[in-house]
Amino acid sequence: MSKQAITEVDLQAYVDACLPAARQAEVEDYLSAQPEAAARVHAYRAQRDALRQLYDPVLDEEIPASLLQLAAKPPVVVDAEKRPFLSRWSLQRFAAGVVIAVIGGAAGWLGHARFGGGEQVVQMTPLPRQAAVAHVVYSPDVRRPVEVTADQEDQLVKWLSKRLGTPVTPPKLGAIGYELIGGRLLPGNSGPVAQFMYHDSTGQRLTIYVSTENTASRDTGFRFAQEGPVNVFYWVDGKFGYALSAGIAKSELARVATAVYDQLEHR
Amino acid sequence: MDSSALLTELPRLRRYARALVGERAAADDLVQDTLERAWLRVAQWRQGSDLRAWLFSIMHNLRVDQLRRPGLKTLPIEDEGFAVPTRATQSDRLELADLGSALARLPEEQRAVLLLVAVEEMRYEEVAATLGIPLGTVMSRLSRGRERLRLILDGRPPLTNLRVVR
View 1 (tube, rainbow over the protein chains, first blue to last red):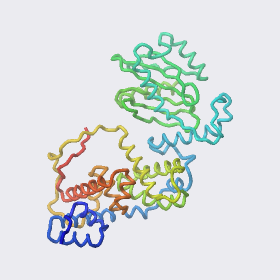
View 2: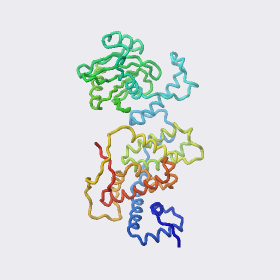
View 3: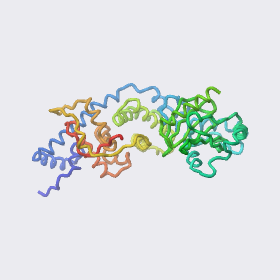
View 4: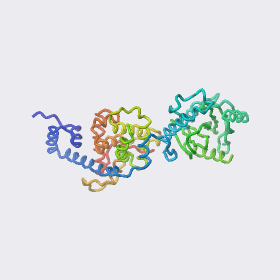
């Protein structure tokens, strides 16, 4: 008899009852002479049975209505508020895309950037990502971090407000240790957005990204995102989206975000 | 892909997600994300191919993204010093409450393979295709996962790397 040696793969396949009958018999022979291996196989089968016993009841649970709805038809409008921010990105992008596609034709000044046949889903970059990228691009710049510096703050405010079509002023963060360096105009998903840059006494830079492009989703509370080394706090308030980005600890950033939020609230 | 086919797969998706993630709300979030992505990518699904395998691989990829997203920094250390209090005896009748927490102590990659084989009853080749890994890797993860789970349940902490939150 020239049996092939029994391998670990054979033992696993034996546990899962997926060996050809002949090989199965060989493994049985082997196990009868190898109590330790037999004990393992026995334990693995007990594991399998216990796992099924533990998780099979999930099959019979009532399925949450939100999942049933989503399985029944594609997500066009889903309550974004209740979603963790992981899926909010894809969802927001999707929802925003649908909205933009529908109103795209009406948005006259967007005429040069029509969205195809009017039904095409447009890929929107989520706010925190836009903000983080803008932060990474401009904040390390030693010589030209901003377009207009803080010593011309009046002009900066006037200019950005005009371009964004709504009053926009940089929050005053001196009380919590951040001084304004200046700001710049940037392209957002569909039009201009503003970025303000601050630094603390150690030179650590922080940017505030202000978008007025929010059309789709409702207001949100603070949300946190991380893009590589950059931490981002962001929230949506009416048409405004705000995002604070910096390579600083989440707790410190939260402190700044709270200060910014308070100033905007009491404006 | 039609909605009735999706509805049919929902219970299994939920079962796998629950076992993989552990916590009910987080597991259902993963299922929800899976459905959203499935609809978004419905054009990529080939009619007649295995819908379940496709959905499971979407879920797997989402989960990998989730785990890759920077979170708490982890540092692998030797865990010989981390003896877990043990019970004197252990019968074959595994206690289910312990099983859930023991399962959670497996590395994610081993847990996924073990669950797909033992609970979802996928063939090894299907597991390899779903997770996008070679068959040999499936077998080694299955073997290590089962052994590790056995040692944990026996109250013998396995002498391999643990990930400890710094």
